[in-house]
Length: 171
Length: 171
DNA sequence: CAGGGTAGTTCAATCATTGAACTGAGGAGT
DNA sequence: ACTCCTCAGTTCAATGATTGAACTACCCTG
Image 1 (cartoon, chains in turn red, brown, orange, blue):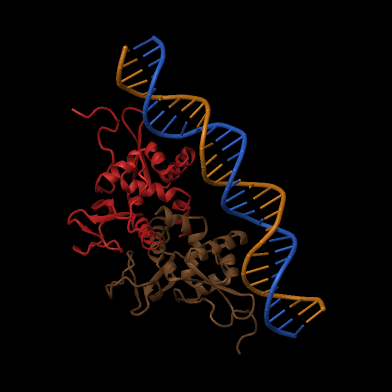
Image 2 (cartoon, chains in turn yellow, blue, orange, purple):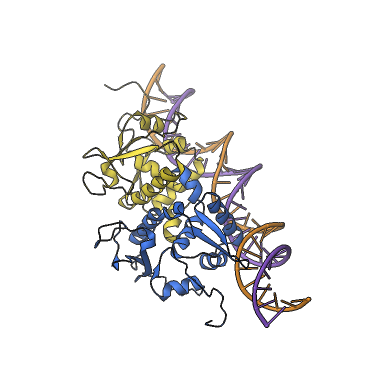
């Protein structure tokens, strides 16, 4: 456990990982969504890459880079989920901020991460996240917050698939 | 989750909590077992008490103080266990350092915290911890390490019940 | 009333974090 | 070719947290 904490125990690291599960992949999105200093973000991403929790995928063209969870990183889901659940249970007077449901049957998972309908604990890739009744009332305007407010999103999938730019709507 | 991290996200805090689950209760034992600076330990314990995760129990007589988990603190077990499991899975080449079993049926629990024999996820108070094959080969000599090496111990129960002093044996 | 154990506090040196400004690579438009 | 823009970082001074050692306060024992 001490060794695990050397990997994910630094300030900001778990918030970066949570955003990875939500589908955030770009430096600028982590920065805007988390209000994390750029130097610290660069440092944390470098550390996560070096321990094999996320992979750095430069685009073929351009300077853009995607950071995506590896298998080792995705396996942190139970820990991330447990911590979030504890926060919901003991620290969220207004009700849950985020709700997770099993994508194949559209049933909300319970506090242990199990789908009551299927009787299994789905991996994060089989879950969707959506806003709950206690969602943050301060409407942030970074594009990560906007998309997460917009509707359910499948975990581990890119939040901003094709037309990453804010240009005119596609063909 | 951000609020949960404000409670348990600071350096050392999760290690202190892990020791709480193991049955460590005294300032001096946390200090000796974790090699944590006294000032930081005092600060962390104060913070954990103030958010209701542990309770401070001064002894009736003497200056000794016990720090014990509250219900809110005990509910962090899934998160602590998940993190430890991840560390065992990905960061422990020599095999598990610690093994947990269900006290009522003496069966080892699986990676999800479930008892395969009973089909339930036992609360921490129903678990025992013991050394695994990959246990730390550097034999520490603080009394916490010694007792944990000695044999299985029930979680959440005091590691040093009656004669806390190192005086002569027996009544 | 000395001696020892326990739970802290104090403090200077060291280390990490913050926020703002800067760099450098790579298009897009003209 | 040239300028403008975006993106992913780096640099750096100021601020804040951590460390380790020494110190204090309290109570019990002899």
